[in-house]
Length: 416
Image (cartoon, rainbow, N blue to C red; front, side, top):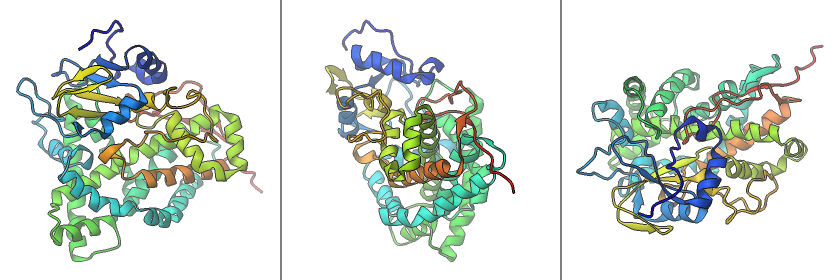
């Protein structure tokens, strides 16, 4: 390991979360493959990679993967073994599986996210977006996270699954409990794991009766399709069905929450882009790609090293943890021209915001569609949209990076 003169990075502290790009620039320039502080207190440290080239290499190289490496010297399970329901749930999420289990699960779930199915869902997304704005448009103000960015994708996922979208309050409560305990951060207090354990059991209790019902009365929804696959011999257990539904309702929707919230924030901070998209909605698909590149909804993902591998002149050893800094890669000047500039007409928008390799986000097509629709409806329906608060309070999370709230004002409709 090469000794670095730069201080060890701890990406899980408030100072980094509130201004990550300044930090990224420094490490990308001075120590792009950096031995920093791990979120796992049992590990001496973790590697962090900052350059686009290295980030893509780690995501695509099968020497790195998501399933934890068993080590004799330290405990590396993602969840303390005392919390059995939560550990069982998380260990069956697609994002934490490797082939052959990852291949089997992804091949089944990805059928629900084909371009044709997503295109057919667009009217549903428009309807939900309009419904949510119907509830606030007379007030002239709202918390965009609480009242729009969060409920929209979770309601869409509920429709796809065959769950009741009106249960979104429950889904949010349980999803946040799982997210707080499963996203990499410094060791959380015991009550965080206790809440996640309770939420895991609540999800099981919610979905088990639905699975039983779909086995007897199948419908045109994802749960019915997963049940059919299990019954036809794809070796899909009910536990895996519950875990998949839970994963889609938690981590699977959080990307879109931050895409909508941070996309709105970027447009409000760049009025010329805001004005352009209002008059030229055909630019919105490209704008969504630029939003993801410019202020990546998921700033960091992690991998375990499966075999000693050299990256950027550093030897990463088997069993080491690697933090892949997507937000840094998407602003790497070696990859993007003027990366600090927000340009919704940028031609080169091939970002890594949805990951890469076999773990490329299977819901990326849906997330893009939701982002396009959510921002188009917002721009069209809420005239004179503006920020109500100057200082943004960021959630304590470098992975699912976004504001806790985003208060906005807009012009009320004239009542005749």
